[in-house]
Image: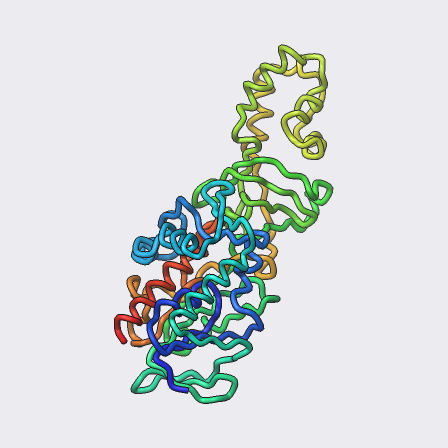
Length: 390
């Protein structure tokens, strides 16, 4: 059981790393199937990258760390690989690329690339008793001793524990003295304990959402029985902190004030709520009516009154009490501190031969294929570095 490289984690980052890491490479994972996150992603069609991927689409305590890997293995490199394997794809929205067929095509592609490179992979295999040696590392795989010169940790974060996600990578980083940044759920629905939005469950509307820090996001907002979800909320959840408010701007693509003024000329005799229900979901209008005092006909509303109303609809402050947590979070924010890693090779600066790639590192992308691109880029960077050092 002597290997040049052992990669722990058969997810997106681990598989692409293995395909580039040179000879005598073994990939292990405790799960029954490889790349389960790829399989379920994008509704089974895998949002495998984003046309507009840039370092600004990522969160990290060091926003510059991701630049090296992302610039050397780009979305265009992965798209070329997808094309080489004859996988058809389409752009959905905002540069998000999905398979026309199944996400299983991406998994099959990665396994084929590994097979071509002579990589061996073993599932339902747990790693334990990992120690540094004079020649690299020793460990046990299902209780059997093994050694390697290079050890790559591609175990992901804590998100979606029902799929086997654990804090293994963080525990190993601590064991070797690597610092960690705070971990928390990201790309996750937000919850409200007072049940304010229960009656609106299933209602969707376009919105611009902003937290107290970071950018705003113009995407769909979805009301749930527990709170708020939808792409706009998932995006902002990575910037939100407990105890803080978020701001909702309903229908940002529409000039609500001018629209209501125009409708006042043509539909002045209609009830204000009736006209608003043409612009917003009727359930939402009914929900807001008591707090906004939505009474009377549209013709009875002065410009000042319409302006106040529009301000309330475009600067609506709400305070979530929490999130759905790791159970439904798509990613884990934080992780192994980038201060401890080389941005070029992903190797631990003080532990030669030890690499951390993908989600386990403190680099987290936006919703829309960015986290997969980080997996491809960081995995490729480590794999190429290992191959060159062998």
